[in-house]
Image 1 (cartoon, rainbow, N blue to C red):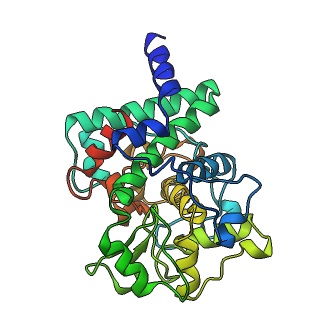
Image 2 (cartoon, rainbow, N blue to C red):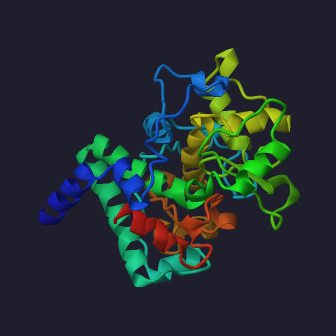
Length: 322
């Protein structure tokens, strides 16, 4: 009980303001200009900051169970939606991790301090779920995604290189909003080289944005909110919008996609070791999920969550618990 009181008091005062202060910046809480992009005008709530956009879609995807059939055959998942375990951001417990388990889910195992913080996050998530403290649970994930946004884009969003790329690739009459990063990674496959916005997504339907687009179009069916699947100019406007509505949605959705693979796969390699018992996979509704997976093993989009550089998971967790 003493430990529980400590984690509740910690998360109550922590906020996205603390994430901004950690980076000595105000990118998450800065009031943005009125958005001219229709994709930013699809909701009753007028989100005027990146942080509000992130918080809004954490709340939205806490309850919604997005469809995810895009890579079912690759990850040995049921091919029909009705045969899959439904998953939202907050619907399942998080797996605790160890050096042994991480050696089976990512390629670069972090240090003991990082593992301790990863388990602190998982323990808080699980405690809040079991107690029904959903507001605290959403705050915890807001801090997670706020730190992730900084590690992905916010520290270098308005550099000369970012502005130059926006002019080069942006459609006619497009002006890059403040805080929206454009980055070109020549080492990626051609379809994924240009990356835009809070969580660095590629404006190419042949890349890995298809599940986000399909899910968004399913939930937000008003004509102005529908995203056309083809056309780079259109997708640049979507991912490079003023208040980053769709980029925030896709960021949260990407974590859910990784969870969906772990819950629904019938191959041990694609799920956490804790989800096996006596050498066999547990039933999908009895499994836990983990954000710490190598990209090819659980459809993970984010480098920091798989410790891609060897220390970026530590940087992310240190931000969450600074």
